[in-house]
Amino acid sequence: MSTLDPEDWDAFRTAANTMLDASIEKFQLAREGRVWTPTPGALKARLARDLPAQPGGLDTITKQLIELLPYGVGNTHPRFFGWVHGAGSPGNLIAEIAAAALNANCGGRDHVGIYIERQVVDWCRTLFAFPQSASGLIVSGTSMATIIAAKTARDRALDYESRQQGVSGARLVGYTSAEAHACLARAFDMIGLGTDALRKVAVMPDFQIDLDDLRQQVARDRADGLQPFFLAGTAGTVNTGAIDDLSALAKFAADEQLWFHVDGAFGACAITAQNIAPRLRGIERADSLAFDFHKWMHVNYDAGCVLIRDAAAHRKAFANRPDYLAADGQALAGGEPWPVDFGPELSRGFRALKVWAHLQEHGTEKIGEAIARNCEQAAHLGALVDAHPDFELLAAVTLNICCFRYVRPGLSESELDELNESLIAKIQMAGTAAPSSTRINGRLAIRVNITNHRTRIEDVELLLRTLADISAAS
Ligand SMILES: *Cc1c(COP(=O)(O)O)cnc(C)c1O
Image (spheres, rainbow, N blue to C red):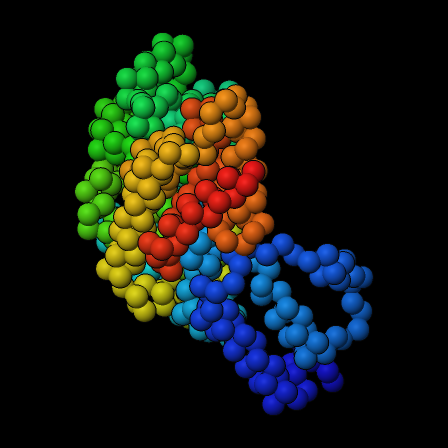
């Protein structure tokens, strides 16, 4: 009888060790070489093969796996500055081996995975000063966390009848700032309210939500017979890192009886940095909080979390177990409450394990120090840009993001946009650094986001020097 287990365990051990060594080396040499390397044509061609019917052999597969390692996004490199990506950490290699060995289904039942996830959620409650009664779930990321939070808010607002009857005729509307992440609109789409039901509130010059505009929009919707139910603040916007006034939003939401959600995808983690934590005040008053471990906490992809203050509402919005999975189970069927009752997935991987190991290996203080350092690096870059005759800042640096552009006299706005777009592509292709782009007040910006514990001050200096060289030659 042939199982899927190796016939030769020694050969398997050798292959596994080879892979482990290559993976450790990738992290050890993270500072060296190119940031991003395009996937070579020959490799792409090999990735278009037919579905194998016959065994390929472990050595061949291991070799193929190792060949992939140089062609990732580049976010393990200290000069990866694009979007908001975490830099990962080697400790995760060990935890992921343990997770693979356990091969646990973390939807429920009585096994160690359930207790690890509970421990992680409990740590998160503590970190964000949520009450002990709050519920939480480890998920793929903030997008999923947001969908879970928005669905819970929706169902509570409709007395949970929406779970059977749907939302046709519902007049629910929600609010967030024009700088908020697109995952909020997608959540409104996915919970059946539609993206139009999520109002975009104006921002102030510092990109924080404008409370006057919020107040007016809510009043207008109420006057029109609509039912405002949801308000999302952002702790760290993707464009500039702006943190909304969360205390003011919490108060407004309480006064207006709105569900107060915070998108803290990366910014919420700055609560671990002593000098930034005060700016997040009010986060502890949220009805729900969505954030990621895979960004500024550097847990390897993917891992995020949703915390929900009203655990009963959370459960009522998701629980629907058939009899064969009924509660009050004995022995292995015990372990209540089960994660499956708090989210859309039945079978669930063991994401919580790498988070649990990571937080224990490093502790929140060290993570917070790396976060504070990134903010100093962004401020340093901002000062360099400000002092440089050929570059201009497009937004004040308030957290870890610096948006600026190259300027050349005589060029129109659209020519400047094109030129800056091409500079970003050129420095990415050169392999020196990987910033990304955005638009700030309509202008194309070179956007440098620093969520990277490997970044040093000389890395941001090298970035600006290289951009100056490339632009002079463009
Ligand atoms: C990254 C991000 C998201 C989406 O999170 P995922 O983990 O990618 O699903 C949402 N909001 C903000 C502010 C983000 O930076």
